[in-house]
Image 1 (cartoon, rainbow, N blue to C red):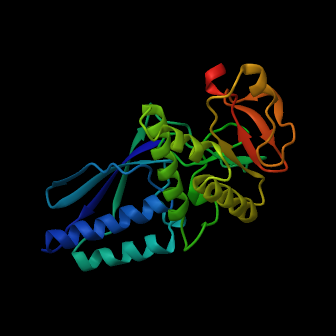
Image 2: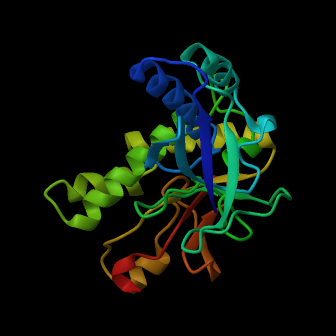
Image 3: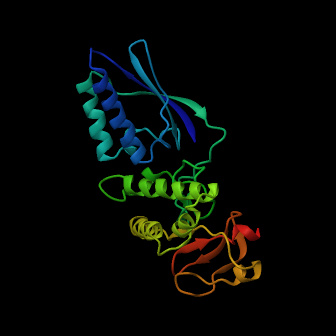
Length: 256
């Protein structure tokens, strides 16, 4: 991932709320297209310019070729708020974030999220590196907003189960069951992405609990009931993989 400074110059007097609204529309469009990551938006005004610092998957993530229709519209509306088109300055690689997947399409991919990662939920099955969402066709309505909403919900459930609050069991059901509301949305998105990209796309099921390590090792696929244990763990996380149901999972964290 990369740190990028974005500057909007104010070329005429304008109301603060118009400037803020115009810039936030651009930021939201970039985020919903996967061009910027996360919700944090450090912002400051200096010498008649409004400045943002964002995290991007690649050095050229904000290039116009990656824009969604909403992004192009938001940029066109900047002039109405007295703002110029953004100037972009690449600061450098973010040393403590994930490395983006290579441009070549993977042999398979998966939807995978955790509450500590703000990167794309679409991962390469070959490396587990995040794939920028602007590389794949839009899920719906010209961008990936709905997929990112699913990711936000997944992260919220993951945070709840990690905190061990009273909602822990409900959160674990959402994360680990393909028939849960969260699971149904996620598997639907995986099917949609496979249709759009023509790349086998799997859905990750979080697993914790279980009776014993032996029983865990023998548990069948929750989709079809068939064996799905892998001979070797993939990427230190994936112990189960069902090609028929397009599901992957880990050996229960209680026994690792």
